[in-house]
Image (cartoon, rainbow, N blue to C red; front, side, top):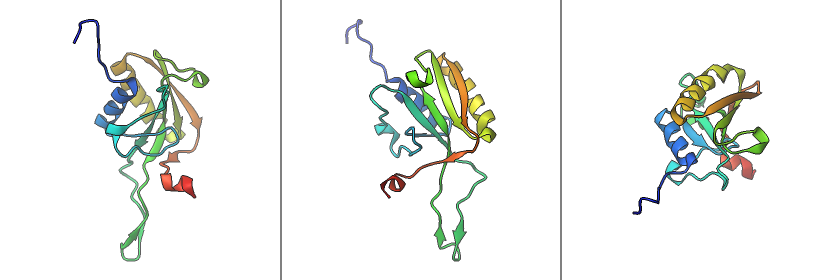
Length: 142
């Protein structure tokens, strides 16, 4: 390899790996989980990554002698915008659009740690008062 050539992971891959190390699950910007992060692909312009979180206090509902239970849904904390003119995000100043005022402190701490790790400035923007949940792909087909 020539000294004039540098190989590096895309920003989306580095951030995805970091989120997984911190116990979060990557998602597409609409809240659908990425089942196999090694195959994770965001849009061609590397604009955003969704953040899912498993709340340890929430358990799926069970009924009929625990034989039936609802499918577990992660909390959809928000979307990290890297390169998105609509949200005024760029390579030095990211925006995290977050859902749920009750998750604001958690997301702010995550943003603080992320800013230090990736040496960027991050704006946390509350875009919805009520928390969101993970979306299943099957729901989009109905």
